[in-house]
Length: 611
Image 1 (tube, rainbow, N blue to C red):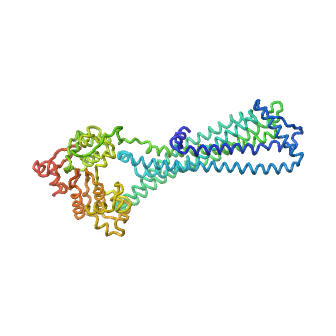
Image 2: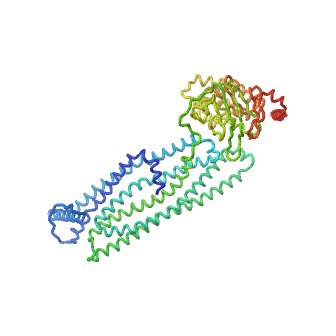
C-alpha cells in the first residue's frame, strides 16, 4: 500500500478538486444508507408487536451517546406509534416504501456523482503518465537506449500503461469510496453495539491479512509477466526490422520457433497470474460468509443471554443490515488491493523510464555560445562502458574550415562527432566552442549551432514539406523549395503526386536511398547552421546517387565549419584537414597530399580502397 500511496502522490494532486467532490459524495451516500434503513427497528417492533411499551415525546439529550441514542429511539417510536394509531400499520408500510424509494434515489444519485467526478482523475492520470514517458524518452541520453530494447520500451508505453489503467486506475473509485463507507458504517455499528463491533474489528483484520498475502505473491508474478511481454514485443520489433534478412537466409522456422517458445513461456506465466487473480473472489466470499456466521453467533449470544444483552432483536437485524452493507465494500476493497499489486508491478517497469537519470542536463547558470573562431577538442577521453573509445584526443577546427575524420570501423570517428552536440558527455577533458565548454551552455543552444546528416537518412511518416521543415519554426514554402533545390531534391519532389504535400511513408519507405539522403540534406540546408556534421552521408549510396548527394553536400558546405566522417576517401580529398583515427587516437593529420607523402596509415587506406 505504501507504493500505491506514492503513485497517488505523484499523479493525483492536479485532480484533487475532483477527488474531494467524489469523497464528499461518497460520505453522503453512506449516511443516506444508514438513514434509509434505520426505520427497520421501529417498523419491526410495531408490525410484529415486539414490545407493548407506551411512548411519550421527550426532548433529545446530548449528555452522552447512549442518552442521545435512547431519546432518539424513544421519539422515533412515539412518532411511529402516533402514525399507527391515526392511519393504521398498512399506511406505515406505504410510508416506509416511499421513504426507501426517495432515499435510494438520493443515494444512487450521489453514488453516480462520486463515480462521475472520479473519471477525470482516471483518464487524466493515464494521459499524464503517457505524456511523461514520451517526454522522458525524448530527454534521455542516447546511452540509455543502447541498454534497452525498443520493443520493451513500446511494451511499457502500451501494455504496462494499460495494466495501470486496468488495475490501479479502475480501483481508484473503490479505494476512495469503500474506506469512507466502511468508516461511516463502523461508526453506526459502534453506536448500535460497541461490544459486537469490537468483536467484528477483531475478526475483519484477519481476513484482510489473508487477502494481502495472496496479493503480494501476485505482484511478483505480474512483474515477471510484464518483463516477458516486453521481451516478446522486442522480438516482434526485431522481426519486422529484419524481415529481409530472415527471408534471405531461410530463417523463418528459426524465428517462428524462438517466438513460439517465448510466447508459450509468457502464456504459462499469464496462467499463474490469472489463476491467482480468480482466487480473490472465492477467498473473499468464503471469508465474508465465515465472518457473517461468526457475527450471527456472537450477536445471537448477546440477545439470548439477557444478563449481558446490550442489543435487542430488532436492533440486531438493523445491525446485520449495516454489516451486510459493510461486507461488500470490504470485499471490493480487498479485490482492489489485490488488483493494485498487479498494477504496481507495471508501474515499477514504467518507473525504469520515468526515474531514469538524465545525465545530459543544462547548467544552473548557462553561458551564451556562438561560433566565431574555432571548435576545440581538449585532451578528451570517453568510454561507453569499460574500455576507452576516445583516448586523449586534441583537435582544433577553425571556423569555416572542413575537417575529415577517417579510419577503420570502430576507430572512434562517429563517437567524435556524437560528442560535439552532446549526445554523450566526455569523461575527461573538454570540448569548447570559442572557449566556452559546451557543458556550460544550454543543450538547446549547442545543438542550434549544428546540422547533421547521417549515413542512414532518418525521416518521418509525413510530407516532403514537413520533413524538410522539421525543427524550423514557421518555415515558408519558398525557403523549403530553395533548400530542396540546393539539395538536388526539387525535381523528384515536384514530380510526385502532390508535390511538397506528398507523404513519403514510414521512414521514407516510398523513396530511394539517394532521395532520402537528399531530403535529409535539404533539412540541414533549411536550418542553415554554422556547423555541419556529415557522418558517412554517402557511404550507403550507389555511384549515381552519390554524385547527386555529393554535389548537394558541396553546396551545403560552402562557408560552413564542417566535420566529415567518411569511409570513401575520394569524398574528402579537398578537406582542409584530414585526421586519421586508429583505436581512439588521431595517429596522423594533414591535407591529402601531406598524408600521402608520409606514406603511413592514410596511404595504406587509400591503397586498399584503390585496390
